[in-house]
Image (tube, rainbow, N blue to C red):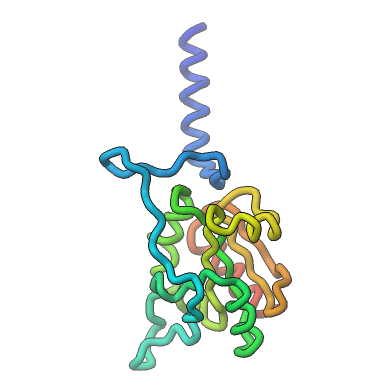
Length: 177
């Protein structure tokens, strides 16, 4: 009987690793190799830089989206979106969320994402720093990435980490709507 219990537990662990659920607010912060919790990056919070063109200076393929291309003030982003006729991509995230960090490392720096981000104002909302905003948008698990129109209405939502393809497909679909 003990062997079957061990097999069942191992199967559950393997299944959990493949499902890759979204982070919940109750998870502990990620620790570095020394066991220290990671600190959130410094951020000005009110900048209005965005991925307006995504094209390289020489007119070739899109450039990579950098951390500086994301803003943290949704009101400013919505105003920019209205002025420039863009959509808003909001990444509800946290520094301690491993799937959120996978987007930062594996998806956002790609030329494919940069190309899809053309016509978007990019907003990163840390749910620990702006919990009221996360509550307003009914964020229960992260990563929670939402496409908003310039009036702040939710057009589409993607929860959890699924890699680049579902995110880019959502962004392209929203631009066509």
